Image (cartoon, rainbow, N blue to C red):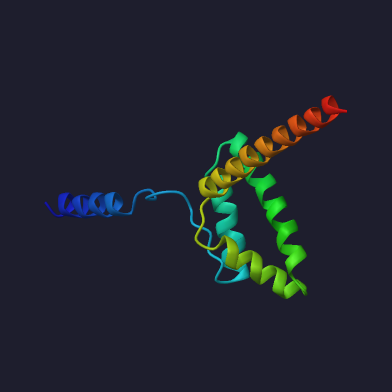
Length: 119
């Protein structure tokens, strides 16, 4: 009877602690937490989305670098800006930006064609 009770308690504890409720959330509270949760957020993604995630981070790092006046400010701005986001959220924003920029580029190409035809 005692082993059955122990087994029951173990099963209940495993059920309560099993799995995560969703994707990892990036924690910008410290450099250590940021690096750990950024890696976890990346692991939540499939191969195709990992590439988009890396591309989004590269673009974001470049924009953040342009705003910062020191390495410390750059690192803090980067952590603060990504704090609370998930890997899928970063990828979704990247997809939205690509769609917007792609549409703008197509509109610009048609504008050029109209100008050239008018000459």
